[in-house]
Length: 96
Ligand SMILES: [Zn+2]
Image (cartoon, rainbow, N blue to C red; front, side, top):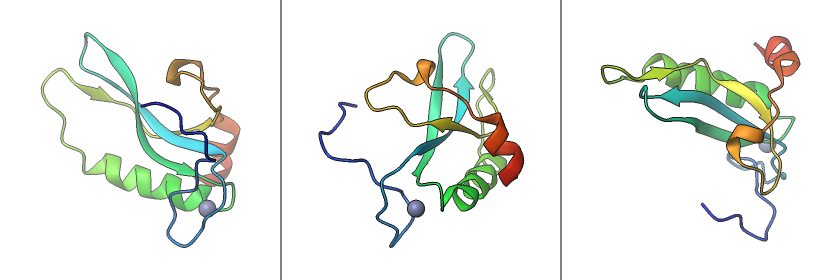
Protein backbone atom coordinates (compact mmCIF):
# COMPACT_ATOMS: atom_id res chain seq x y z
CA UNK A 1 0.00 0.00 0.00
CA UNK A 2 1.67 3.29 -1.02
CA UNK A 3 2.03 5.86 1.72
CA UNK A 4 -0.24 8.84 1.25
CA UNK A 5 1.26 12.33 1.53
CA UNK A 6 -1.45 13.22 4.03
CA UNK A 7 -1.28 12.42 7.74
CA UNK A 8 -2.75 9.04 8.61
CA UNK A 9 -5.59 9.43 11.07
CA UNK A 10 -6.71 7.45 14.07
CA UNK A 11 -9.28 4.76 13.15
CA UNK A 12 -11.61 5.68 16.01
CA UNK A 13 -14.90 7.18 14.90
CA UNK A 14 -15.10 10.94 15.47
CA UNK A 15 -11.49 11.11 16.67
CA UNK A 16 -9.67 12.67 13.75
CA UNK A 17 -6.30 12.90 15.48
CA UNK A 18 -3.14 11.84 13.66
CA UNK A 19 -2.29 8.20 14.29
CA UNK A 20 0.87 7.55 16.30
CA UNK A 21 0.65 3.79 16.75
CA UNK A 22 -0.21 0.69 14.80
CA UNK A 23 -2.11 -2.12 16.49
CA UNK A 24 -1.10 -5.29 14.69
CA UNK A 25 -0.37 -8.98 15.12
CA UNK A 26 2.20 -11.19 13.49
CA UNK A 27 0.55 -13.65 11.12
CA UNK A 28 2.22 -16.55 9.34
CA UNK A 29 1.15 -19.45 7.17
CA UNK A 30 4.45 -21.19 7.73
CA UNK A 31 5.99 -19.93 4.50
CA UNK A 32 5.50 -16.20 4.72
CA UNK A 33 4.89 -13.86 7.65
CA UNK A 34 3.47 -10.38 7.87
CA UNK A 35 1.95 -7.93 10.27
CA UNK A 36 -1.84 -8.03 10.20
CA UNK A 37 -2.99 -4.50 10.97
CA UNK A 38 -6.03 -4.09 13.20
CA UNK A 39 -5.96 -0.32 13.63
CA UNK A 40 -3.99 2.87 13.50
CA UNK A 41 -4.47 4.88 16.64
CA UNK A 42 -3.62 8.08 18.42
CA UNK A 43 -2.32 7.81 21.99
CA UNK A 44 -5.70 8.66 23.52
CA UNK A 45 -7.56 5.86 21.71
CA UNK A 46 -4.84 3.23 22.00
CA UNK A 47 -6.28 1.30 24.94
CA UNK A 48 -9.67 1.05 23.20
CA UNK A 49 -8.14 0.04 19.87
CA UNK A 50 -5.94 -2.59 21.49
CA UNK A 51 -8.95 -4.05 23.31
CA UNK A 52 -10.89 -4.19 20.02
CA UNK A 53 -7.98 -5.94 18.34
CA UNK A 54 -7.74 -8.50 21.13
CA UNK A 55 -11.47 -9.18 20.79
CA UNK A 56 -11.19 -9.52 17.01
CA UNK A 57 -8.20 -11.83 17.42
CA UNK A 58 -10.18 -14.04 19.79
CA UNK A 59 -12.84 -14.80 17.17
CA UNK A 60 -10.46 -15.03 14.20
CA UNK A 61 -10.61 -18.40 12.45
CA UNK A 62 -7.28 -19.68 11.18
CA UNK A 63 -6.62 -22.22 8.48
CA UNK A 64 -4.47 -25.24 9.20
CA UNK A 65 -0.84 -24.16 9.41
CA UNK A 66 -1.63 -20.52 10.07
CA UNK A 67 -0.51 -18.78 13.23
CA UNK A 68 -1.60 -15.39 14.51
CA UNK A 69 0.06 -13.87 17.56
CA UNK A 70 -1.71 -11.71 20.11
CA UNK A 71 -2.12 -8.12 18.90
CA UNK A 72 0.63 -5.73 19.90
CA UNK A 73 1.43 -2.04 19.74
CA UNK A 74 3.98 -0.67 17.30
CA UNK A 75 5.32 2.83 16.78
CA UNK A 76 3.89 4.11 13.53
CA UNK A 77 6.79 5.23 11.37
CA UNK A 78 5.87 6.89 8.08
CA UNK A 79 7.18 4.95 5.13
CA UNK A 80 8.78 2.25 7.26
CA UNK A 81 8.33 -1.37 6.34
CA UNK A 82 6.29 -3.40 8.81
CA UNK A 83 9.21 -5.57 9.83
CA UNK A 84 11.19 -2.51 10.88
CA UNK A 85 8.50 -1.06 13.14
CA UNK A 86 9.40 -0.84 16.81
CA UNK A 87 7.17 -2.82 19.13
CA UNK A 88 6.12 -1.17 22.41
CA UNK A 89 5.67 -3.88 25.06
CA UNK A 90 5.74 -1.14 27.70
CA UNK A 91 2.54 0.34 26.27
CA UNK A 92 0.94 -3.09 25.79
CA UNK A 93 1.53 -3.90 29.45
CA UNK A 94 0.19 -0.59 30.68
CA UNK A 95 -2.94 -0.72 28.51
CA UNK A 96 -3.94 -4.35 28.85
ZN1 LIG B 1 -7.92 8.60 18.38
